[in-house]
Figure 1 (cartoon, rainbow, N blue to C red):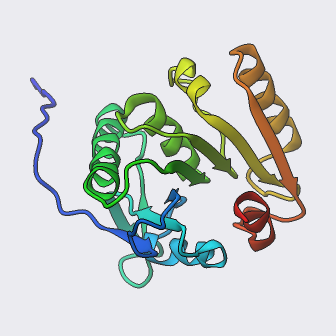
Figure 2: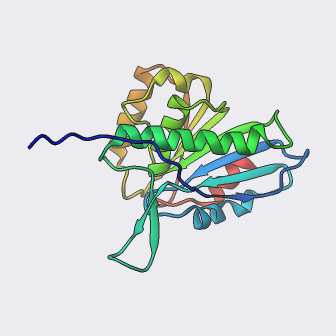
Length: 212
C-alpha cells in the first residue's frame, strides 16, 4: 500500500475574548493562553481582579475543541497534540500573530507593554509563539509550565521572563523545577522564579503581586 500524507491550508473561524475597552488610557495588553481542556471564556475570568482602565486582557482560544468526558457535555480545547505537531505549531503561531495584529496594530494604541501569560499547556504555546511568531513581546510569564526543548532559546533573551509555580503543583515536581532552571541557565536565559502555596491553579493573590 502506497500511503502518502498530504496537507492543505484552509480558512478557519477562531475566537478570542477580551476584558477591557481599547482606549488611549491603555498602557498594558495581556494575552492569556489557557491550559489543556480549558476554554478561553472561562479562563479569562481568572484575570478579572487585575482588570482596570489601563489594561486590556485578551484570551485566545485554542483551535482544537473536544468533549472532555465521552461524547457530550463539557467542552475543552487543546493547543496541539503530538499528531502532525509541526503543522499544529505553525497554525497556532499564525493564529496568535493574527490576533495580535487585530488587537495591537489595528487598535487605538501602539506603544504599550505587551505581556503573554501562558498557563500549563499554554506556557509551552506561549514560548513557541515568542520563538516562532512575528509579534513583539515585552514580558513572558510561564505559569505552571516550562520552556520546550525545541525552541530557539535566543528568542527568550529579548523578553522579561518569569516562571510561576505552586509548591503543591500536582504536575510539576521540585526536581522538574530544578531541571528547568538548569536548562535556562545553560542557555544563558535571565529569569525570575516565583513560587506560591498552592496547586496547579491561577491564584488571585499572585496575579495581584505580578500586575498591581
